[in-house]
Amino acid sequence: MATFAVPPPQTRDWRELPDAKTIDTGTKRLVVFLDYDGTLTPIVEASDAAVLTAPMRASIARLARHAPVAVVSGRAREKVREFVAVENLYYAGSHGFDIDGPGGLRKQVKTSAVPILRAARSQLEVWLRDVAGASVEDNVFSVSIHWRGVAEADRPRVAGAVDAVLALAPFRTTLRKFSGKCVFELRPSAAWNKGEAALYLLDMVRKAEGGAHDWFDGVQPIYVGDDVTDEDAFKALAPFGAVGVLVAPADESERPARTHATHRLRDVDDVRAFLDALAARAEAPPATGDASTT
Image (cartoon, rainbow, N blue to C red; front, side, top):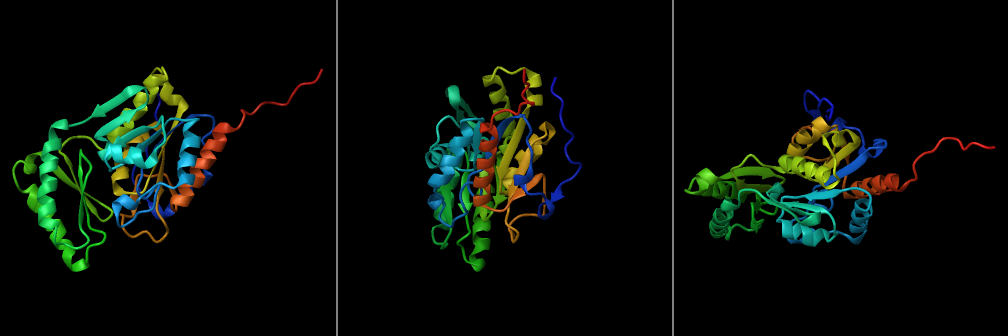
């Protein structure tokens, strides 16, 4: 039977978290979860411009040769797979509502909500088409309403449009609103999020590796993310002794002070250095005792 570390009794101030590059993962098997926007690529005003750099892609591919790696994003699964373009990863799109992975793994949650989300997106596009800087992104199992480029005076119009859509049937009973960094999200009303998706993927890795339940004792989950939506994963993985890494510069002002993360990195460059360090550790030959002589 797996034994679990006791999670912190309360959240911490992220500004006081230790640098993730100082962690020692020991000899445990790594299982790594990565957010996309703000973690593997910088946050940009035009969502389609968040393209992964070649060096970051190489770092992800290098780590994936030694450990299971999952990308868990709010973007559509097909889009994040296209952006990352590394084979043999697990991809969880739409905050984990749409998952694929090695060996033909496929899981979709609340497929009945997809046409309703499509209708909500169409209505929002009509209501927001004259709000400069606003954009509506179709993530298949969710809808993102971006307002980073919207003038301060017009931002209440964006929030009002989202709330007005949710007041309509059938959206009122089937969709829920969430907030992120300069974005509103509409998702199916279901007990599912990045945390549930991370737990599901962790168990799928166990099954793929033929592990019994004591397999969890020998693994070190690591989740790296920058947004409030990643808090669900930090919290869900804590009982497994996970390292939760929040990506946040010292002058970060778009998130609450409290977090379930255990460590911090400053930016995308820090994330790449961290992934390279994990890969280097995995590539190092196992330590041996002093050689005997005869």
